[in-house]
Amino acid sequence: MKVVFLLALVCLCGDSLAFVKGINQQRVTIAANPTVAPYVISENDSGIQLEIVKAALSNQNINKVDVQYMSNQRADALLNRGHVDIALNYSGILITGIYRSQSVVSYENVVVSLKKSNFNINTIYDLATKSVLAFQNAPAYLPKEFGHNLENLRGYEEVLNQQAQIHHLMAGWVDTIILDRRIFLYYLKEYQKPMPQKILLSMLFFHLRQGLRTLIMIC
Image 1 (cartoon, rainbow, N blue to C red):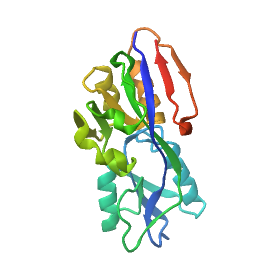
Image 2: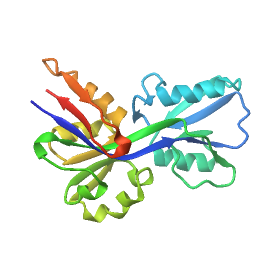
Image 3: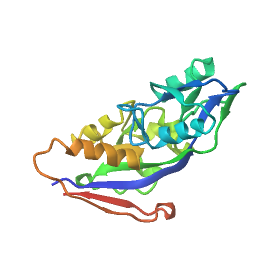
């Protein structure tokens, strides 16, 4: 039996996109991270966030959309150089000719650990002495306190492939992982598929904005 606690809310943030000023052509290129399902699903160029952006473009009679998959950092760099028209989840500094949209979706970043570890994580500071595997460039999207306390962690690494975070946690290679709650649930379901017997998933959600926990039990 494995039980996972989805322990502490790190940041509830609205992620926008950035775009080059004056998109008026009939075809645009979007740069997107390929491992942030269900927001972006690279297998069929779909997902919650990508479909919202496509709908907004369609409303402006732009129906020819090319999606290029890459890391968020590379997407930022290519947008700044004018090699793509839109970058999802832009975290760079806005320069002349680059504009940020209103929030498209809200990412709910959380800390996840195995129950058997018996960690008590209620704040970012409770991560001290623990190893953390986060998504690429995580400090740019998380509260400043997180970035300021990296030296207190027993170990800290980042990965582009967020699906790998689930495998690392389940294998016991890392104490905690940091990722969006929906991304965690999506890839957790993918992780469970090869298993010979059905795994029951029960969830108890508390009001995270009040600092309470979200409990996910896998048995």
